Length: 109
Image 1 (cartoon, rainbow, N blue to C red):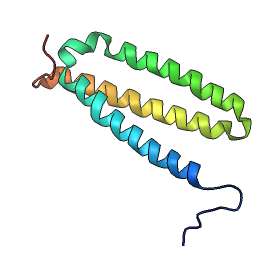
Image 2 (tube, rainbow, N blue to C red):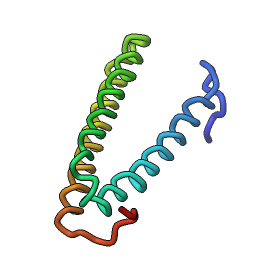
Image 3 (cartoon, helix red, strand yellow):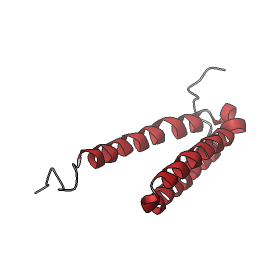
């Protein structure tokens, strides 16, 4: 049975972090790459620029986390790198597929 208190502090924070990251990942995957794919004809020229701006921002935050908690720095760094690689692949796919297959855009130009 799940112990609600690990004896070394509550489990509420890990529980909320886990739930929060699931919500964040699903929101990122459903909204942005999908919209980029559907609107690739107009978004392609600047799409990857903004993905890379976001990655630079993410590197800054992950680096700060690593500096604040050196004991867990490898886990922060690995998680950050893993998420950036996945995001890069998703957006490259959205751009490529959207440019090749068109589709009905969701925006009026």
